[in-house]
Image (cartoon, rainbow, N blue to C red; front, side):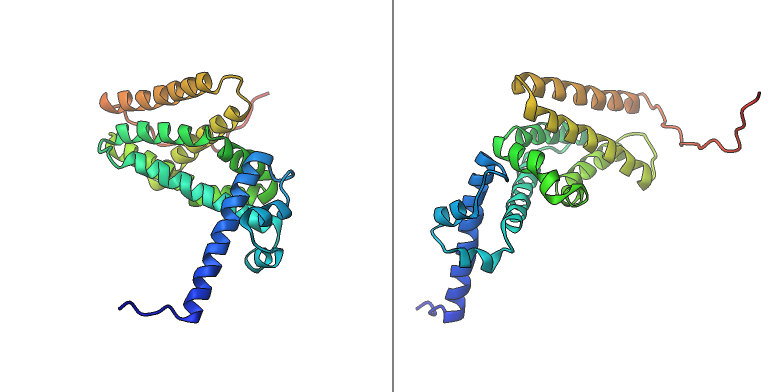
Length: 224
């Protein structure tokens, strides 16, 4: 016979299911109505719990939003990572990662919660930190693998610079999709542009072109 769950275990299971239900309903509310249009009354009604239960898990509306945001970013990272599983070649891995990223940022819920409301509700600093814990880490791994597979001999600082440039470009591209008249056309253009850059890097690497070490000019004076 299976051992009976203790009272403490049952309470923990109930607490976890309550929190999951609140996050599920809040995700739908924030995705459809945005932060400003979502009420805690609607969230607790949809989850069929009391406000007291909500405040047991969250400090308030922003706390609920932060949990939804974190869950969306975690799901996005899992989706992108899943797309990379079958790619063994670093360049193909980069293409697969790009396509998976663009698929994520096209989702209406992700656009509304993460791209549109995220920076304003979390603040830019916390928003960027959250990104770096999720999607940026994936981009860093992909770009690092591509550069390691090339003929370029770069230190970690330069690899990080490449990663930030690519991540910045992809984030800006994703943000532009929220106001695109025809997202399908814009996605095709973004994919073509970034793949063109990747193919350019690959072509240079295949030809044995070496990336020069950056130099900083010092002691330069202007002549009158």
